[in-house]
Image 1 (cartoon, rainbow, N blue to C red):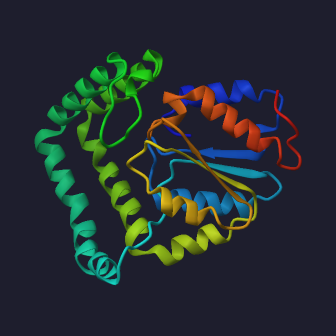
Image 2: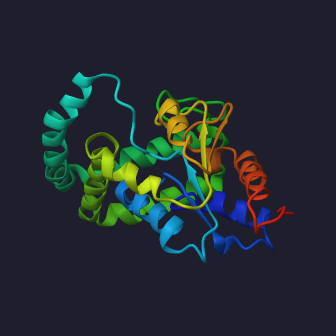
Amino acid sequence: MDATREGDRTLNSAIHGVAMSQARVHGNEGEPGLSVRCRYTRNAGSGMPEKTRGVVLVAPALPRRRTSPAEALEWQTLGRLVVAAGPPMTRAVLRLAGRRILDAKRTAINDAGSISGSRTDLIGGDPGRVSRAQVDLWLDALEAAREHPERLAGTAAAFASIVKAMFITQRPTNEALDSVRVPVFVLWGRDDHVVDPTSLTQHARRPGWTPRPIDDVGHLLPVEAPDLYTQAVCQWLAVIPGFGRPT
């Protein structure tokens, strides 16, 4: 996974002794872009079969269902223009107000990490359940970015890549996912308003894919509820040939 390092440590500890190098765990926080993930998932599933026996996707930003032909047309026209213009506009904003934006985000993270029982409309769940250690990791990363806000320009390009793969160039993205030849476990929180549960369920209809929504958890699943996250992954690993039952 990317930024959810504490969740990774919890999971690795729980399945100590299992050939973890044969499973690929990938989540959303700090992700480099959906196109990277899809290429990564495809390679893990088909390009390295001797090394990979399973892939875990946590709250993944996979291609979303289109609700109507009109919506599809909008993404193919206006959507393409917005995606193309987004990165240069974001770079200009970062040059002018990058440090102020990062300071505001730092305050938001501090507040979320200190208020127990708080809930948000977007990421859902209870950010107050995230450990102080994880909050400190995020704050350290923000402090490093604050010293060089211009380096965040790559984030805009990554976000554009995610949006493009989710809504505009869905066919190659879905073909990459179709090519996976190992078991795939798709996890998300039922209180996560970032992902589309219907789309994730549809993706998980592929042979060898297993969906697992978790109640009362939001977008920060691995760090908001690491025990539930670990338990779910371990239960899935237990039925994959070659893994056995983690202890």
